[in-house]
Amino acid sequence: MQKKYDAVIIGAGPAGVSCAIWLKQFGFGPLLLEASDRVGGLSARNPFFDLWTPTAAGQTGIDIARGMASQLEASGAEVWLNSPVKQVVKGAETDRESHARSKHGSQFIISVWHHDQLIDIQAHTVVIATGVKARPLNAGQYESWPGVLIGPGEKIVQQDFTGLNVALLGGGDNAFENYEYIKSRGARQAHIYARSVRAQKQFVARVPLSDVFVGPYLVEPNAKIVNGHAYDLIIVLYGWEAQATFVAPLALKYHANGFIATDHDTAQTSQPGVYAIGEVAQRMHPCVVTAFADGVVAAKAIQAQLTD
Image (tube, rainbow, N blue to C red; front, side, top):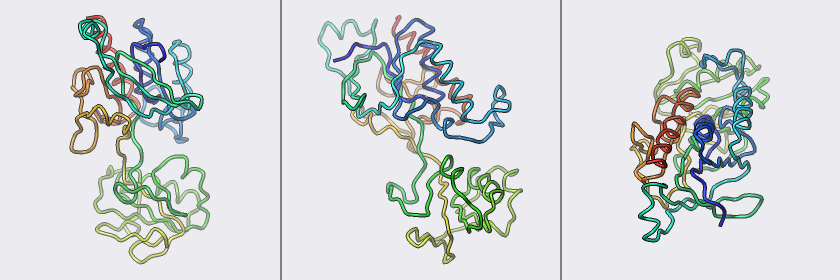
């Protein structure tokens, strides 16, 4: 068994990085675990300019992620990349440990793959900051088909759209913003299929009505056909869903929309000592700035818990 950490933070996106830095500044010993090879979450794979964050003038999501990684390194917080978590469980407590819990926090055991070995580490508190993943074409089913892309980001940027006929599925901001991008990259034709339109008006206004089909539609992914029309490429932009299956043993409460339920003031979940921040909990409007703020909320709550 490894040493016990004050907090193990799972997910090195904006929320997790913020929480780790603040806890380190408070004098605690956090460990930040990240399943991928880089810090930054979805930002680390977003090559577009950030037009929303006041301090990000002229920066892409990738630039912002690099800044996060640099600040994290400067903080001295311990970080393990390429270390996916298998599960988190509540540790068994002796009577003595239970008596001391009010001062030192709960005990949790986190099973994590690190350097190709599954190891167990202990923590007084756990912070879930694993964000979201793109919703699949069919709910609960994660099949892949040639010529069908799921979600926005790197896959779209790396795709050559020259001369292609493209169908975009979804009625949110991503569908309408990516329509513009795809057309600018030489697509011969692009159509949006949406059961309802939820995108912001300024995005909708920039797409010709003739290229938007609203209402029920049928997708045949193997043949790349939507409502009887054949396409070279289908892009599924159905939004996001929480990714935190590793906490199933904790039996946390979830909202009806599938995101982890938390206390408004502390970000604590239904399990004392476990916190959820950022988009995995959808506590605020999802963006980099609110994720940073969520990390601070959890860090302050953990500070109060461990020094009570």
